[in-house]
Image 1: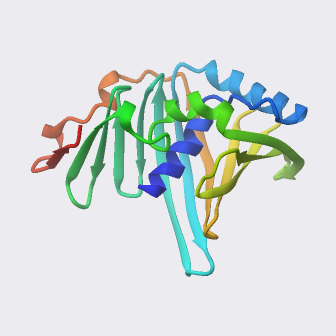
Image 2: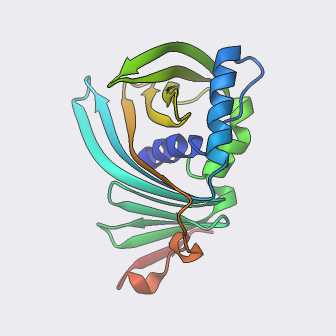
Length: 214
């Protein structure tokens, strides 16, 4: 669940960014521009690579994933799991176990529900501009997000493309020494997405064990 926490958090932060009054002016300007750009899209499909590294515990894992977003609906596929959300209900399907857990979206942690994260963003984080970084002939703004209240992670570092205002990568620094790195590999917008894409249908998964936890 923790992996889904970070994945949902980072990728939902691409949708919209609201800032705390304590943020520095340059960070505010950059993040607001990114927010306006992302809000202009009716739908988004984002492919990403993901890695989790902790040198102390010899953890070095990598995966690829996809998230599709339409308003308050999303479908996240990563690490052998598919998370469906139609805005009201969240279905978490675990492929290896052929099992699906059902929860109300309103009762899920902010980590799982992107909208909850966005709604609470302004009071949970402080943003700070760090530097400009040039990589592969592109310039990126580097911005750190530090949680105002206690969290398991110390900070999140975002790289935002100076030309497109889109977030291109992010690194979550966990307090236990683990780093979670996300790299956006493909970003498609405004494609038609049927609402059925965001709903789990048990008949599509023969023999699935459904656990309704509402």
